[in-house]
Image 1: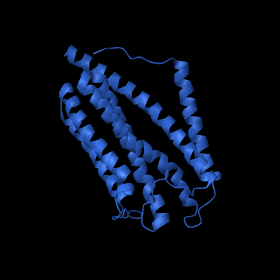
Image 2: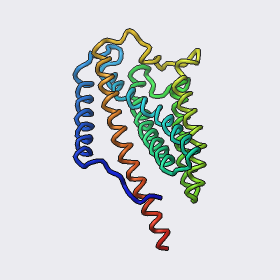
Image 3: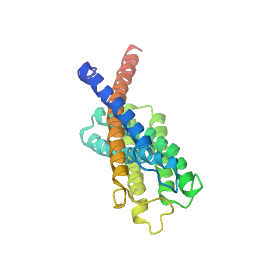
Image 4: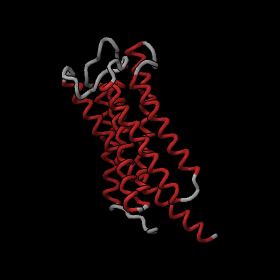
Length: 232
């Protein structure tokens, strides 16, 4: 395994960090102050501008992991396993954000924090369980190569759960209380659209920053473990 940590120039690293911080602060303040209030839900509907962008990242994170896992199957390079692991790590982190913000929005819209009949909620919960299973089985396997192979197969399960979650409000005839696709709605006011896309941009910057940071951290841990095993 290569024992070098490739870093971009520290100035670019710091500039990216500043961009993430500024974009997140702007997105939060704009979501609080700019769009009109939905009368049926009151101020609590503003959680929408956090909930939707975070949910998008939580859904396509497993898809990225699946792509990286496929490349690992062909190249057998642990780099791709590490990238797949990083993508699922962030998917699970953002999924927890969805599980936190979703009940707040649901309570204001439906009067209950969790609707057991809602297809999107149940499928998203299954996605979280799939990701959790991915991490549990990964850490139970001591061999690095066997860990990578098992993780690649489990990435397929997580990706399938993400696709089913995305299609829950599109393919099921009675999906429950959950609103339909945001992109498919033509009645969203311009101020809501602008705020939502600003949030999407900001949280995608956050995802990329955390992705690079987490991947770098995993590479450092791998080198440390290899050095420790060689010394023993």
